[in-house]
Length: 386
Image (cartoon, rainbow, N blue to C red; front, side, top):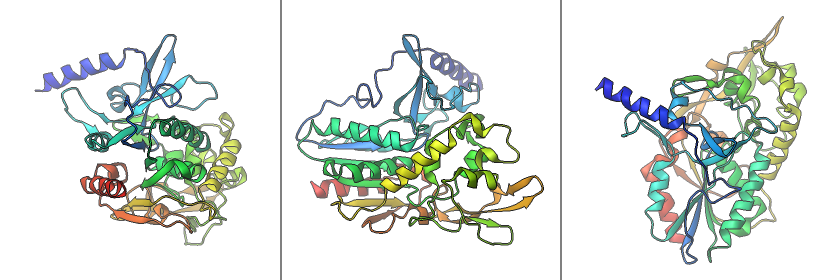
């Protein structure tokens, strides 16, 4: 049995290292491969942060660099840092990461994709995007994609956004509400929080790979800075405290704030330089994006369904202390609140003014759309609207 497993690993790694033509991506050919029928209802799935494949263009071919088994096992560590010109393109929404034959598989979006594809009255499209780029750019790309899709149908689009995909979906709805018939948000960090400080300062493991998303790489992603609260908005308050519980007034969209409190690339134990990427530009773009997802009373919104979980402890308050070398933060021991393990229920609640129906789930953040009951509730509301 062990020999067979390693044989399959070898076969997979060989195949994953081969280059091939990639004919999909939001700015190229529709990755869904759907032949539209005007009388069907278009559904667009927008995956979350880390939820789309990435390919690097190499001469006349494009090589998958995220996420294959070799990356998940830590046998391959391509540089995912965001550069102004890095020839990296999005592929499809991640289905699953597994060995050939189904051994040791981890399902990502395959359950919701397969469930929606079974519906004869629906056409499922997906919007994969480069989740490293600032949300403002990805949001505009999503609008262009929706405009393209809408030309092929008589009915408006049902939009389903998971995590960061939910933020992008709300952005698109605020810009083009005329294109959307229903909006489903799943585990979206609407009001921000401090959960992503762990990614920025400690990194994020993918399977057995503890290197591919190290802090100095994540800090170059323009998207992550849209996950923090804006002090003037109806966002999460009191997220930073001293060790004795005194609130620290936050201003996450000011470079001076990150520098003063040794956050992100200014962390006291990090070796990367904050000058290696345009932090100030990222913060300005992220704040503008956050402004664009606030409630607008002049818009006639489609029905909004918010899929959330409060069954899992989720980082809510980060405590720190000032030393002679600067501020030190106990990131691995943040004070938790109810949530989905990544986004607190408080953060997942839409800002003031929005009307939404809540669909509860017991599943964790990355698996929310894998919940069969959630899938049934989505289909129930889509079909009732038809």
